[in-house]
Image 1 (tube, one colour):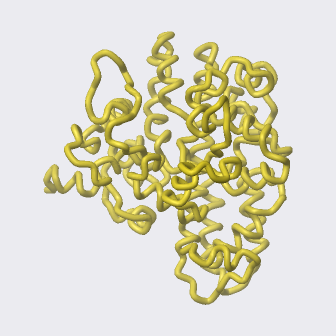
Image 2 (image 1 turned 30 degrees about the horizontal axis):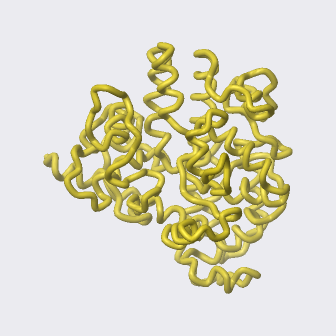
Length: 378
């Protein structure tokens, strides 16, 4: 029988290889929101990395908390429960699941592998105010706290408890992490201000609509493709409302009357106006996070392939010479994600990658990963 200390040591990952291979045997309630054994890696709650980031004198081992909402609350309060408030602003120890502050090494490794993004390089450029219009930085795409707090205020949360328990984990799963522009917005950096702005409130559909206003068409298409955001846009790459009825949202039908659509178009209400809209949001955002997480895990597996048979020879060869990923992933990035093509959905993207790779023997491992991806994501 394992001790409590041994269990805690198993509830974290030291690097991407461990993460992808699930070397840590994590039990139910610790690994994901699921009560079933055999949870998938895209469900992993990165809050469990809290006690593996080099912070000293932490107040609480978040591994000990099996209740996902309580774990979120303790994470936001640096391991303590504040009796006066559900959530404090996260501060004091510098740890953030999305890699802000530079202390969640596992998340930073995700960014580096998928996007050749380096925390120290970008941080230095931000400090020197260089290239702010083109830089992107790490962020959590959709906030748990915003919607949960408003639902608690209006006493909707109890009726939506099951979905909130799921979302409390998924908000800090791999599918909800990404790179967000840091152009100037309301006299501040967009990445930081979007959570404070009354017109955005950390909802990523409205955030993406703001990015669309700033980026010319080709740049926006590439931003969506490189960040795997196809569930957030329709077939014309116009932003979809997360407050739409889920059945319509999954068909990528443009919302017409809900409050978020007004927010997308003319600066209307950013928060849900009733329990129904809050429920729609929770269903839609979980749908987006899950599918994007499944896709990201597959891309990480391809990026980390040790394939010596293929060497990338594209136009970015010199630029990407220090990017320590497989040549196959560089080719996918160059030929698919950095293309100007607009894709209908994940299946359309997967098919484009498969066609690009063809039936070449040197790509067999990547093709196998893509075959499994297509089954998992549908």
